[in-house]
Image (cartoon, rainbow, N blue to C red; front, side, top):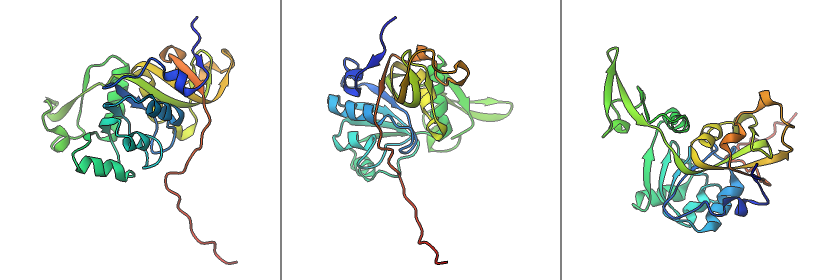
Length: 235
């Protein structure tokens, strides 16, 4: 069987990136983002990217790094409120944006990975989200047609993986990563812990290795997106 393990994020993306490609990037805020692969994607120099992600990181980390270098042409996202450069580029007409309700975005990724071309949902009916989209009535209720999403490349982050690409996500990092892993024509995963094939409990695996083309063990900063503190009360 082909070796899926790569020495670093740069080599794991070698031959997979190109100008104008569509990329899915897992994570929510700064939780569970494939930070090593994002850096490698930036360093690849690929430009005019369409990036599918819940959000665009922050100004100096995550996908925000690709905004700084203006490698992203379009974002398909749900929430982008933590990134000032994102807002600046969008308001200046330098960046295209396709907003999605969060659940709709997750389902579009899941549908794409499952080979489902489209689905109907009530979310967004009668709002700006519905503009230009087909609607249909089921049982007297209006539903909106949304399409499944398939990317040229998915980059995801897991807690633990084996050399065959089977993945386990930890707690909140099990967000957009599982469905995005299935919806890329190629998928590269980075993990905190890499073990031998067969070491993982089959009942605990969230993403089967059949969906993963390449895997790399990374090092992580685990930044906090927003730190909220309060003064210590005197005894």
